[in-house]
Image (cartoon, rainbow, N blue to C red; front, side, top):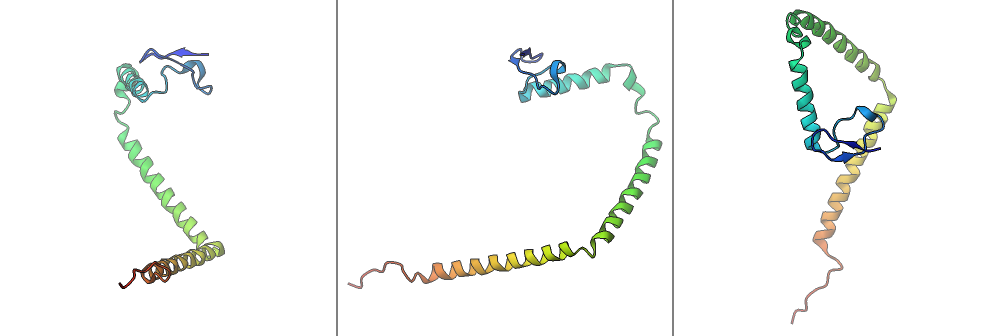
Length: 124
């Protein structure tokens, strides 16, 4: 089933998750135009005119409560991870990987400078 894009006029196959409700094709320009159209329609409706009026005290209180909960949750998670044996094992493995990488880089540099098998020019 193909559908007609409201913005560019091309035919497209709508996403099966959206189905008949999809109004624009998958081109970036059409997606942006659809978004602009949606924003404009929302602003022109009667409902949103007073949507944000008087909400700041409520939002400020909600943010304050939420911040406290988030900080408390982070502290709890950090306390739970302090004695994690997997984390210590991972740290040791990462340290060893770093050491091996450094050894490889040093050996490559040493081999590059030495050139034991490089062809030599004759002294004549």
